[in-house]
Image 1: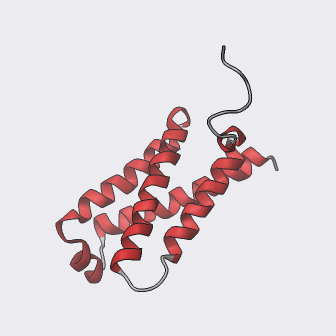
Image 2 (image 1 turned 90 degrees about the vertical axis):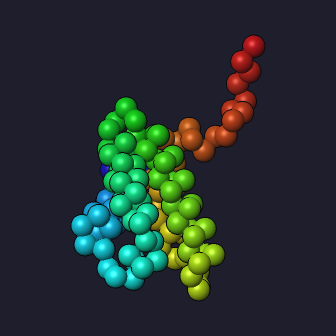
Image 3 (image 1 turned 180 degrees about the vertical axis):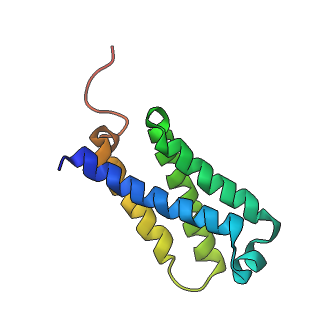
Amino acid sequence: MKKETIGLILVGLVGLALFASGMMKLFAPPPEVVESMGSNLPLLAIVEIGTVVVMAIPRTRLLGILLMASYLGGVIAFEWLQMPGFPVAGVILNTLLYVGAALYRPWLTKGAYSGIPTA
C-alpha cells in the first residue's frame, strides 16, 4: 500500500469521526452536550459536516484538512480550558490528521523554504 493511500485513509478516519460527531450534534444530541453548548450546537454541527464535505472533494481536500486541523485545535483548547483533564480525543484526532496529511502530501512537511531559490 502506498504512503499516499495510507495518508488518505488516516485523514478519512478523522473525517468520519467529525462527520459522526456533527450528525450526532444535529439529530440526537445528548442532554449534557445541549447543556454545555446551548444554542451554538447546530452551528457547530454544520461546521463539522462542512469541513468533512470540503475534505471529501479532491480539489479542495487540502483546504478541508486545514479546516479540520483548525477546528480540532479549537476542540483541544476548549477541552483544556473548560473540562478537567487532558483533551485526549482532540489530540488523538489531530495527530492522526497531521500524520495522514504528511503521508498524503509529503511536501507539506518541508516548510516555507525548501532550499530552491526563486530568483
